[in-house]
Amino acid sequence: MSAHEPGSHQHAAQPQPRQHAETSAEPGPQHGDALPPEPPDGFDQRVPNAARIYDWLIGGKDSYAADRAAGARLVTAVPGARQAARDNRAFLARVTRYLAAEAGITQFIDIGSGLPAAGAVHQVAREANPDARVAYVDHDPVVVAHARALLADSPLVTAVQADLRYPRNLLTTREIRDVIDLAQPAAVLLVAVLHFVPDEAGPHGIVKAITARLAPGSDVALSHVTADHITPDAATAAKAAYDGASAPGVPRSRDDIARFLDGLELIPPGVTDVTAWRPGRGHGRRNGHPALFYAGLGRVPPR
Picture 1 (cartoon, helix red, strand yellow):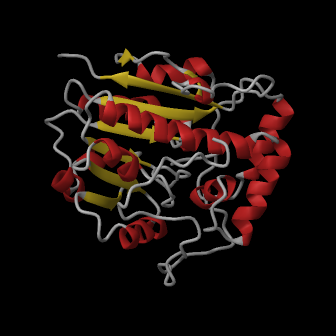
Picture 2 (cartoon, rainbow, N blue to C red):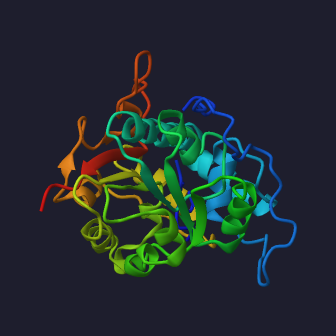
Picture 3 (cartoon, rainbow, N blue to C red):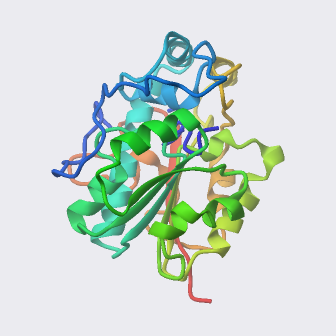
């Protein structure tokens, strides 16, 4: 599981050919950057990877034939999946912009960040605050190596290999502590990643463990795939598209997704279709399209 597998930032589902957040001169990834030429030992490009499937869904170039074939199976099962993934990516930009520009957050931990893409969190956050600090976290060593190469010239930005399933270890890694001060408010971004954590791994407990380490005034943003509005046959076929992949997906209901934010102060509009979360003028949920992602933002209350 890429700690965002799909992303890692990550994950089945997607803003119009991705509405890129306006990028600054900040160093950052662009679509089509080559994958690292020397994959680690044991790497097998014949195994579909959730982060690379997601990259293909949002229009990226960093995928192999097995990833594209899995993505095509997903789109066959759920024709709106590609647009849903792009919608999800647009949510990431909107929630980051809100946190940096309106909520005053200066520190971001993007867990399950997946393959770097244009409009990355540090680029969007630094439009509002040039001193914003960002830690990208992913479980996939290829993803992390790629991110480190692209971010080498970005100060106060780091890429960390860690596993979301072990949140205490993740938050205490030296690389994160070098950039993020958890005694101060920070935003944790769990965008399109929790559906890669199976029920037996205790995903709700994982989020509670993360929240417990955050200072009051911190925020937890999430998006998550749902099968609430597609047929059982489509849900089964979508799940099958990820069979054999690095991280099989687990769609959840809106109620189960909302439980991830239990105990936090929900920021309006609450847990909603990803396209309806503070969409901005001229945007919003497209009538006639089923919700494939829910999204929400919760704030850590005073203790």
